[in-house]
Length: 403
Image (cartoon, rainbow, N blue to C red; front, top):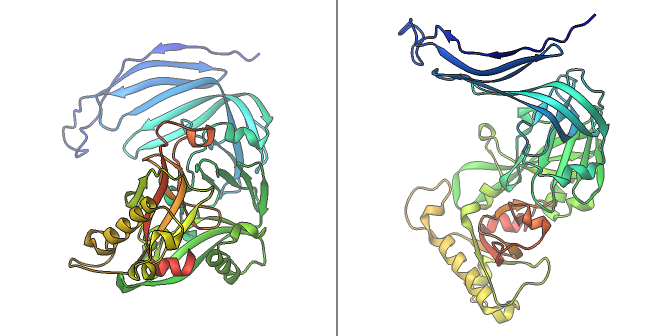
């Protein structure tokens, strides 16, 4: 007969421990003070305590009867693990035989979990202790919660192919969120709009890039996609340059990647933009839906007017000021030392509803856009989203290739 051992122990222990510096120094040590509780339930240890008075001590805590939505994926070892796409305590869980799951599926799970943080190496681990229920869920449940940036960071930057980070990808760009999972025989993509896509593999392509602002080394722009078998690098590059990736059912744009060892630079850096380079303003003339315009360096140089472009004078003035600032400010130079420079810069104007903490991103066609960084952008208007235009200076050489 199996007996459940339930013990509650108040732990107050002193363990010999050397100082945080040289392990041989102060060999007597000041000891580790451990205070908290530990319970054993059905053979599983539930730790809830902190190692105190010690450098790099561990912190243990458990959560019980928690319910969350998980995505199952195949990891590099051929094992099916669970991913919490939201900003949960931890993102990845080993099911440890506690539930029956299939890679590529979505599940609603109620569970107990042990969390461990701290230690010299900065441990951040979680382990399932118990699973009460595990039911397949509708993919829409993923997007009823927050989706974090997992593999896809700000400005839609993704790890390069050689890092072999390919088990899952997710984007927290509100309005265009997605979760992509390795299901063992390919990838499945769940999108916020409800669509579900499948692909055979992932692929990285590079596109040579030259700009007068960087003349001392060769540059390649890295892009990474999911695609089906038979899709060539040339087809991917053409779709990126033409801005119609989303129209191709065989290609899904993940993001831009960088790898300094191979002189691969991400798209935002090649274009000369960053979160700090976006200027937001509010015009009394709201933009049409999906307003987007590029004013080229040549047009500015020729003295083009707002009337000729068909835009309001305040929008044009904001764009011109940004062009002049970025064209001549040496602090914005990439790879160039000091001095006063005048380079070819165009200005991208984007209409919408933005807050000051909105950020440059890339849409599914690898075109620069402005992504709101908070959930209100998906749920409705917010008082902090009080700008209807964003302008950003872009290297003309980049615009000639992609914009």
